[in-house]
Image (cartoon, rainbow, N blue to C red; front, side):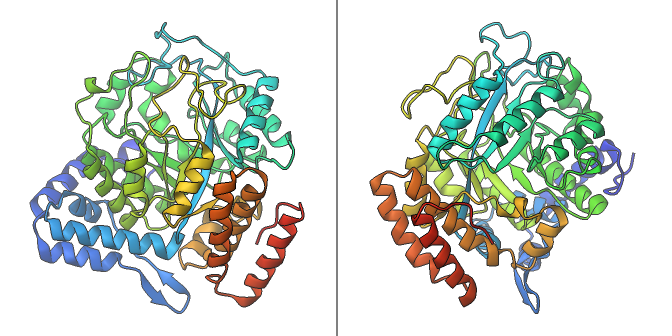
Length: 483
């Protein structure tokens, strides 16, 4: 099969031979200073009449950057990644939390503790009342955006169960709390089921590829529905056919050689752009972690923090408009290092257990049903305060999704930098909600000072004045203002 980004066949838009040729090309040119400088210049943000625009890079161009091991050119990559991140996302960091609904699973993924042969963990599925209690606990922390997670089990976790959980989540209004966006990370499914998820009002549909290397993929997924490489890899096309505008890609770094995965995920992004006119809404960059019955040292493709940072910078340069997500798999120090290089969303106060929130305080966490070790175990309040101390605005905004700015409508605004006319005031107003309803006194003091400072950075005077009025209304107890 030949490489064809417009094809709907997995082995044509993620073409093995094309990746091998790309890696060879990158290796042969990793010290080609002239070519690398040309690639960096191509990717640099350019001011136009419409705003700021970025050309992005092909998977082959980006692979050359990743292969380059010349220190001063690596520093140029980091500087460019920061420039691009600042141009399109500013200093805002969107906050979310995962909510695990069930760890029943019929697959035998060798890197995941939920695999059906693991007898070390108890199996659990939340009832709707337990979902309600989990959501209240998350609302009481201050969260407005969730990513729901579930194992693949057509008997215990059918699509009807997922839809019922989504309906329950959206229905709960506790004190001033509300979950305004539910992103969904569940197994590949049918167009019909994706249409049902769309109609249920989900935000982004997220599906990690785990690895784009077909032979490795089939070995890592020896049995179960997930064994089908093509069905899994082509899921985003079915999701978009089902009406879902925003989809999120991801690989699990450490399963296969990272340069192969890097090229694969960029080819997937190119495919979505070529076929649907819009690339991935988000790209996640998890690394394999220790968990029940899982020893990450078994997989000999692990990457160190410096390589991890370089991957993030190169993805930001190659796909400038995508959101980039880093979870609590990573430590505070690692998250600190990569934030400026491209990350735009992080989780906070996360629990990766089924039923991990309700009934536990900030210092307690159950471990019996965890999907992976959580490296950053700070509370949401601690993460929010830390971000502000680092100069970032923690944002709980869900306005674009709720105003219909999704898919190509979001990207068309983002690609010229116009989305920031909405994002900064929305970030400040949702931060104000958090400060009024959930923050510790120390966090609130830091946050109030940040809001006053950042208000002056809203470029349009009229928007700035409306934002001030809304902030005053929030102090009076009113909620949910948005541009």
